[in-house]
Amino acid sequence: MNTIAGRVLDLYSCAGAAGWGYHLAGLAVDGCDIADRPRYPFDYHRGDALEYLAHLIATGEINRYTLVHASPPCQAKNTLTVGTNASQGWGGTHEDLVAPTRELLDASGLPYVIEQPNGRAEIRKDVSLCGEMFGLGVLRHRNFELGRWATASPAHPKHRGYVRGHRHGVRREGPYVAAYGNGGGKATVPEMQIAMGIGWTDVRKELTEAIPPAYTRWLGNAFLTARQEVFV
Image (cartoon, rainbow, N blue to C red; front, top):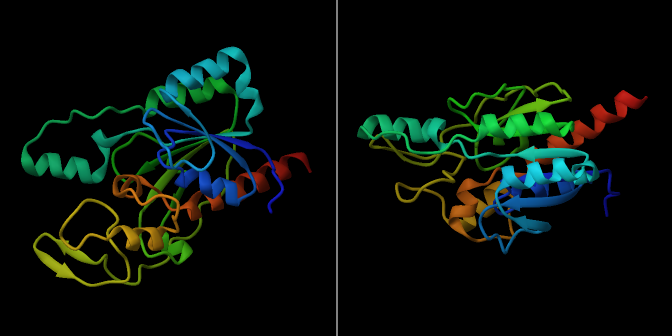
């Protein structure tokens, strides 16, 4: 069993994929999400993430945490959403909670991570991670803004082929599955679980929103290394 090296507050936690990675890195985890998440594998607060973070800051309870991870909704600027809206002539109606989340994270005084998919979300891309970096069955590119700490982004290896499925009317085979949406050769639930290393939920929507725990395990280890170097 890993020795607990600190505690992470996992905001907008969904089913806990990000939290599981920090757990594997040796950190304790508490989650917060506005939806009911019965499969979340750690202690959990159901509620609005911004209101909860503001409460923790105001009461001083935030000081029990070592790091805050936040994956705020930003569908308005996600590459897939933007592309679909443009092709269909739809207007954007999704919330962008990145800026207010960052404002509160800065007020917390703690180191933090903000995670977003590729797209137009206004975050610094301090670290970018891809499933190929970890030998996974998904590509799942994600960008991370790091607050009050830093680490180098790993090299991005060449992809081994295509994501399996239909895209723009063309069917392709490849070593990666499409862990989003339905139809068009998208991954089944068991395929997504195996490809991302997630076994505690079989809810399709939770899986399609998840990041592979390997990403936050890498970030957690990088954070602990960076913190140790500060005190050496």
